[in-house]
Image 1 (cartoon, helix red, strand yellow):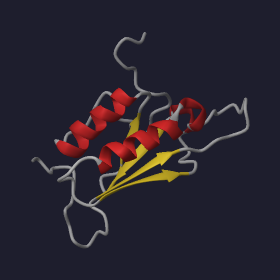
Image 2 (image 1 turned 60 degrees about the vertical axis):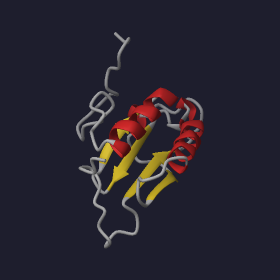
Image 3 (image 1 turned 60 degrees about the horizontal axis):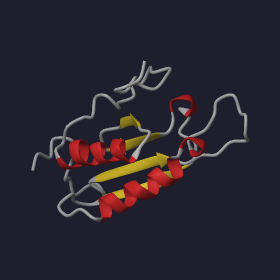
Image 4 (image 1 turned 90 degrees about the vertical axis):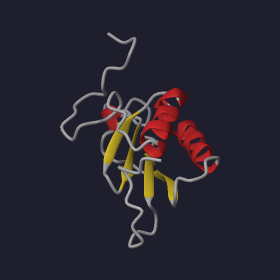
Length: 126
């Protein structure tokens, strides 16, 4: 298994630590929020997917409050790399699990750059 994106370093408590924003704002807030875009259910799905897999090392999936990328949500960040992803569906979560966590590769179509002002365009969108 390719472990390019993980540390497997005993100095870290977790090899991989994933934070999923589940912040909820007042309805109609101009920045929006991740919860209204499905992050709560998708976080639960990610957590179950990770628990069902063997061989990933010490992985923790946590809920997070606002990660201050509201307009780009839902978002998650994976440490220790600090890789940010935008996701919309279980299929996106499955791809992050298989490509990033299992194969050690970035899911480039979902990566959020540090200077992103809107979510990446995904297949089938204009």
